[in-house]
Image (cartoon, rainbow over all chains, first blue to last red; front, side, top):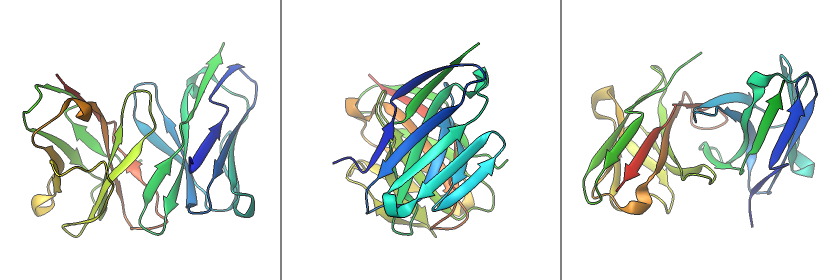
Length: 109
Length: 114
C-alpha cells in the first residue's frame, strides 16, 4: 500500500482561515519533511521534522512518530499560500524520499 | 536561501533522441538526487549520487538513464534513447549530508518526448 498518505487531497479556504494538513506514513519511513510546491512546479523545503513540533512564521509542523503521523498547520492563510503541500519520508539514512500525493490548497480573497 | 538551478526549464525532443538535463547544485553540497514527476502523479525518487558514484537507484532508473558530475561541474541526467514514457518533470536536488539533511530542490525541467 501507499507509504505516505496525505489528507485532504484538496482544500479551499477563505483568506484568514486556518488549515490543518495531515500526513500518515508507514513504519518503514522516518525523517519526515514538508515541502511547498509552487503552481509553477518548484519545491521549497518548509520543515525537516523527524519528531516533535517546529514553528516557522505562520507554519507549524508536528510529527508524532509512534502514531505514524505528521501535520502542517497554516494559520491566518493568505492567497500566496495557494499551491501544493507535499509530505515526504526517508528510507534509512540516505535521503531517498517517498512523497505523498500532496494537498492542493487554494486560498481565495 | 540556497538555490539549485536546472537548465533548461523545458525540453522538447523526438522519441529515440538523446537528452541531457543539467543541474547546478548548491555549491558546498556533496549529495545529489534526481526525482521524476509525471503530470498529475506524485514525485518519485530516481537516483542519488555521492563521491562520483550512484549510491542507490529506483526501478524507474532504467538502463537508458545515466548520471554524472564531471570535475564538480553540472550534475547531469542523460537519457539515451528517450521513450514516450520519459515525458515528465525531472527535479534535481542536493544536500550537504547524506541522511537527516534538508534537500534543496531545483525548479524542474519539463521533458516532452514526442
